[in-house]
Image (tube, rainbow, N blue to C red):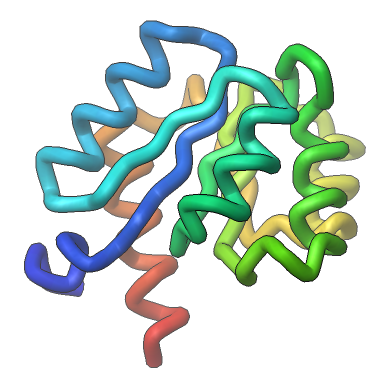
Length: 132
C-alpha cells in the first residue's frame, strides 16, 4: 500500500491511556491516515458508526464497555460499516486471543511486543491484503 493509499484510509484508535492514544494517532497521521480516537467503549461504538473507519485498533480494558463488548456490538450493529478490527492490548492470555477471534477480530497484537511503527506497518499490510 502506498502512502497515497494510506491518505484515503481512516483508523479509529480505542484506548483509555491518553499517552498511548496520542502516540498511535501521531504515527498514523505521519503516514497519511485520517485518525479518530475514543477513550471509552461506548465512545468507540458511537464513533465506529459515525466515522466509518477502515480499521479499528481496540484495547480490551476500557471504561463503560470492555473491548470484547465493543467488538461484539460493532459486529452485530447494522449501522456500523464492516471495518477490520485489531485487538491492541497487553492481555496475552490464549483465552483472550481466542475470544477476540471468535467475536470477529481480524488480528490480535500484544502492545508490549510491537513498537507503534510496527503496528502501523502491520495495519498497512492488513489493509493491502484486504484490497486484493
